[in-house]
Image 1 (spheres, helix red, strand yellow):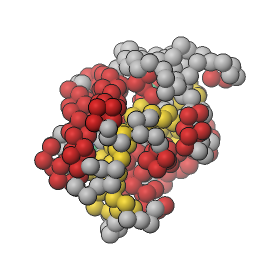
Image 2 (cartoon, protein in one colour):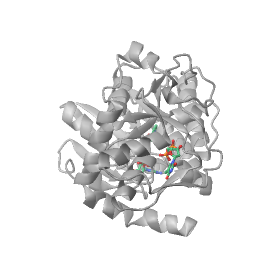
Image 3 (cartoon, protein in one colour):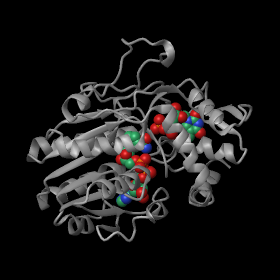
Image 4 (cartoon, protein in one colour):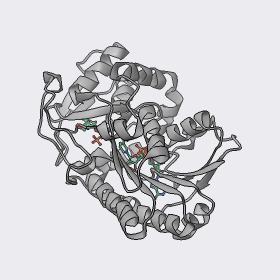
Length: 342
Ligand code: NAD
Ligand code: TYD
């Protein structure tokens, strides 16, 4: 058996990763450590909650005693717990520094003390900063992309806190010889994503016939990857990544935000007249694009889910699971939004 300690397993990517691990690895034992912040939701894991190979522990990754206790006996750490939303980091950044930086350091120290075999630190392409704008449909193969050698240049409090945690993780490798792998992935979408992020927000707002708030001109470019492709990438890095190496993952699907929203509306059969251009996000990164050739060459990983198919599946999931997102939307997040924005 291999014992995986998954942090942030009650979140969007973590819950998909735990389900994927249980489905594909009969020898996996999983301990999910999650503080259950506003973004953590055990209703995303009800189908696996009774699996004898799965255990949940409610704990804060900044709690050194709790983390040390659970680290004992762990083979592989898959570290996903984080404050993850850029807009929130603009309004209040202290929780980002606390969880993303101090929490990561607490885990690394405990993993070092326990002598775990491998520590996979799950990070983001946002640590590279932004790229100059380009039209994703121009077909220009020479347009710049982030590689693992691109200098780190984060521009939001979220990405700055993630960059700090990446540096710490790699410092544990260089200083202490710990077996650490860092992954940097582009924007994920798929089932169980909290509806503060672009895609689930737009799907659920459209279903509720609300205004669809597109920031600024809507021409900001992101690369979109299906969450299952990201999960496969994290496990490929855990299995075959080199110690001290960084791996980029992307979906090979650069889109403007307006293109994403109009695609979703077309799938839903809804008109585009509810789209409203609203005040822009401060410091909004113009474009992200990712070169994942290292992951392809060294891990044998490439994305399997095409953007159109992934969008169809995702929309279907939100249509089939209204209880999940209606409960999330009626809860703490919307109280917070009301406090911030009235
Ligand atoms: P999420 O916000 O959906 O989930 C985060 C989880 O972490 C929640 O379950 C929350 O309860 C838990 N958590 C937060 N603070 C904690 C603490 N102090 N102690 C224990 N648990 C805590 O995030 P996500 O979208 O699933 O992202 C997971 C990871 O992947 C993050 O590290 C994020 O930076 C990274 N990532 C996300 C994306 C994306 O598009 N969502 C892309 C690249 C990388
Ligand atoms: P988001 O899902 O917050 O991810 P990130 O900021 O980490 O890339 O946002 C994706 C893009 O969508 C980003 O350019 C901001 C934009 N956006 C909107 O235009 N409207 C919205 O309501 C949200 C949440 C995001």
